[in-house]
Amino acid sequence: MHNIIHIDAKWFYMIKKSQTYYLAIGEEPPYRTCKNKNDVSKVMFLVTVARPRFDTQGNEIFFEKIGLFSFVTKEAARRRSANRGRGTMETKPITSITKEVMKSFLINKMLPEIKAKWPTSHASETIYVQQDNAPCHIHDSDVDFHMAASNDGFDIRLISQPPNSPDLNILDLGYFKAIQVLQHHEAPKTIDDLVKLVEKSF
Image (tube, rainbow, N blue to C red; front, side, top):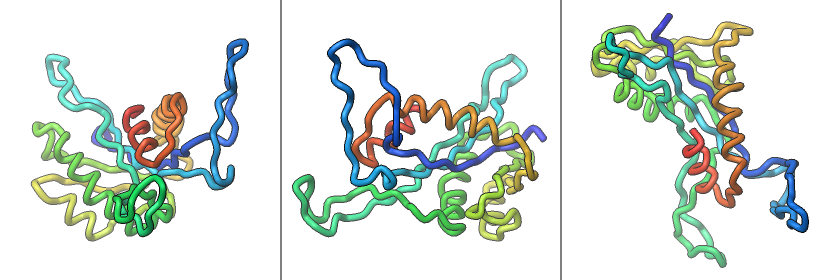
């Protein structure tokens, strides 16, 4: 099937537990701290990609990168600290990714991006969104997803990846690896910094 959109989710960590550096003579090694090396801040991202499309003249009419969505929320700080005042909006990672959270992101974030970027000349074709079999992913026949996906004249269907299929390796071995390498070139100190760096790398 040509009209397949691949989606996958991945955790991105603020820092690695260990990292190799090549230092010049006399250069001080970089120093970073965290509360506990087993409790490094992390954010999950949902990536949506597909094959690019071209018209008869070879012009690209559809770019393969559809979207990158971070699982974060904005919350008001309950207490005052030395770095910010009480009530300041803070970015907090969603650490528990449930089926309801995933459904919300698929319907409210992913579907609008697909509909906005999919070429209008192919809008009447059936589009398949392929997910892996992670526990947090919703069922292929989810009613709420089907209703949202069938709006605006689109026919978008959710399908699951076959067992032991290499279909999503392009994300694990390609996009995710490349994004993480680029992201670790810099040193984010906050969740906002991490989100910006991953989006920039994408």
